[in-house]
Image 1: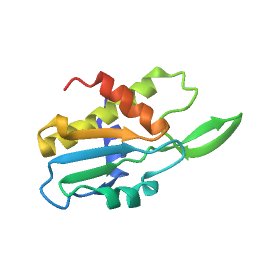
Image 2: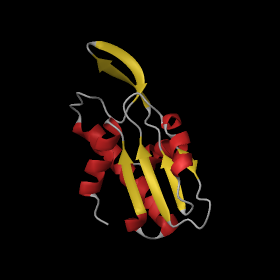
Image 3: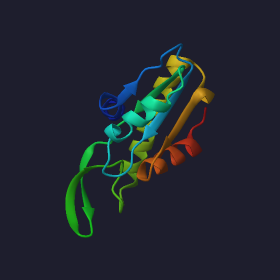
Image 4: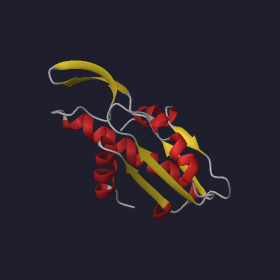
Amino acid sequence: MASSSVTKLIDTAHIIESKGTHRYSIIWFHGFGHSSDDYKDLFTQIQPPTTSIVLPNAPKRLVTIEGRQHYLRNWYEHNETNIEKSLQVIESAKELIEQENQLIDDASHIIIGGFSQGACLPLITALTYTR
């Protein structure tokens, strides 16, 4: 996996820095057609002081919905038949976790989650993550 995919996830992420010593991280993946903007206010309000929040944005891609094409943020096409593209997104998520792990040096202090399509990505990532 080339680092360009991770860079794309990170470069377009909204990061809410911890207010105290950074001991924990939450990585939250938005749902289909949404963005990190939809979650900034919520996470700012509920953020524990020792926790950094990373809200990556999926790239905008052309997707097909009911036979019509739309340009929306999405982690993968709903009817994706190219498994390689899906695996690349999963690897990008793992690399994002690794970057957070380098900051806090404890993978057990990293929480990954999401909403809708953004919940599927951390689920498969966690099931295949080896740390």
